[in-house]
Length: 429
Image (cartoon, rainbow, N blue to C red; front, side, top):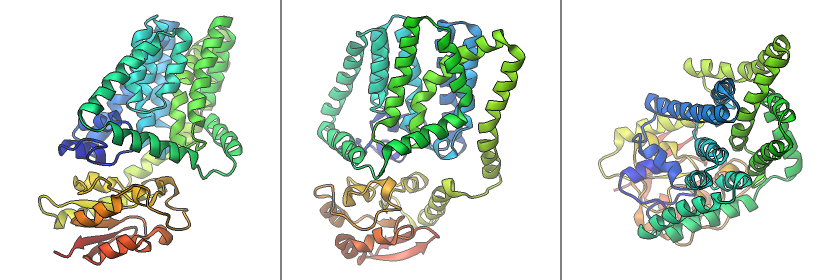
């Protein structure tokens, strides 16, 4: 959403502001003017309904009407009752669900070009669409041509806007460095733990998937296993196993388990109904109360930074003037959303300056050398109107004063506000 606000101000991703994700993940929010609150909730709910519709179309064309309805229901249920930290923000992993389902639908319909094109659209949302493309290729290798066509068109747009080389540097060079520098000491054990936890809350999908596959012909079993296998490979990519990564396996499990559930009702209805209700109660009881707590205004870890950002934004909004700019130390893009301000430099958080990715901000032991060439000089010259330290109070070892360039820059600023998690500075002039 912060990137969408920059685009709405006439800036081009990568060329005019640093952005480490594919462009369509920002343009998704450009369409709805990047407005938080109720508008955002309705917009994301509409997207989930689109995913439900696509799941319905896919399962219905594969098996029948009941399977289609169950697929839609399962997608709705498990995008609602899952980890709050993964549900509340609609990141690129969740945005890939719709192109993922559409691509497999066209592959099943014998339209590999269209399937590849949907993978191409997904690629400009999340590079893990490459794993969806691999699954589509099981149905037809012509999907590669459709994919290539969309990628070429997108690349031409980057070239025309002068953003191709910055895109490669920010999305691919930075992204590969992020994946290679995973702080996970024992990725295999973490994989077993995270997959086990995910399956524990999605046992209904796992059981349904197994029941469906056992009753398919050998050729179909191979395709279904390949679809799930490539999706699991995407989850493993980078060895982080973040909860949001598991949205990649939701389409194959939800669609195929819909068939398994229908078969179970036909085989032993009473037992199947009881087992399904029991398995669905697990995520319902675990994640349902969070919505009640949020409605009552209760605070917990997943929303603490967001609530703090709203408090910071309220103070800045009371002080800002037209044309003022903002820089946030740490990874706190929500502050740009609630202030609707833009940075005065290419970089807008501390990641490119320090080389320390956001997921290591709370645990990093100390400052590292700057990562993005010339970024420090640009910061000193640009001198944004407001600087917010959104990290120093969370990790004293990464406070801005730990870096000589930031220490020198802050001498030209004065503190104008402070919250529990952030410090607000304003330029002296």
